[in-house]
Length: 294
Image 1 (cartoon, rainbow, N blue to C red):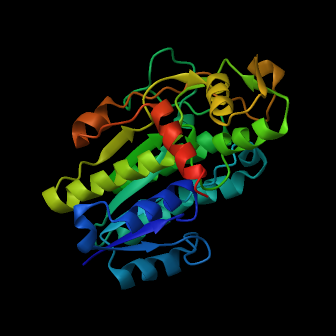
Image 2 (tube, helix red, strand yellow; image 1 turned 135 degrees about the vertical axis):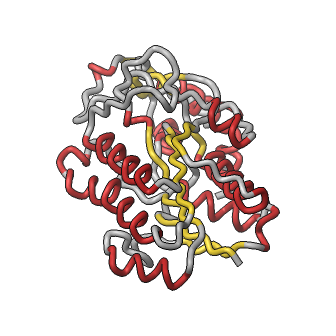
């Protein structure tokens, strides 16, 4: 039996991994034992306890979904951001170095500055502008130093679980007559369920075909939109009469300047692992189907 550890399992991505695991969609389901943990069951900031926990279970795969994701909060809580997004990645890699476990780590488009005008490839220069982005980049570096790692950068993550833009807009569209949403920040929404499927496809290929190709990969849904476009479609699918007004970023100031362009080039992950990626509007339809079941 192959033991697989998932950290940050109560977050958006971890919760979707649990959902897919319960459905038993993959052929390897009878070969593996998933252990889903979060801060209440495994403190990954405690390197000594973490190392013993990993050794006791002899994990062959670690999927790290744990992250400090409060972009604005990271500016004033820098220590916590680096602790979770960087130091904990080092703790994990040091804990699995002897058994050479395979490590899958999730990162972010915020490692880039957002000044590009073409989709970011994995080889393009990183230049994070925020504490959050810098802490995530440091985590990537620790994962790369380990070597037996797959790093997946994603963007605009949303899910039926947790707090996110899609759920917030859905709620506000039913409460407000109008909302102001920025139109000059461009990217691609990522349905966490789709990303979770992609991660498990990679694990499936590794287990059944012995194909684990370390490196950095980009994953988001297909297509491009602004936050304004995204909000308009959410309002429409929420059967709301709420008016969505387009505004510039300068008219909606935040502690951290958001990237103006966050489109990721996904060709590498598609060709390496033969992964098909849905368009963001199709995935948003699935999101609403699942949201209505809750």
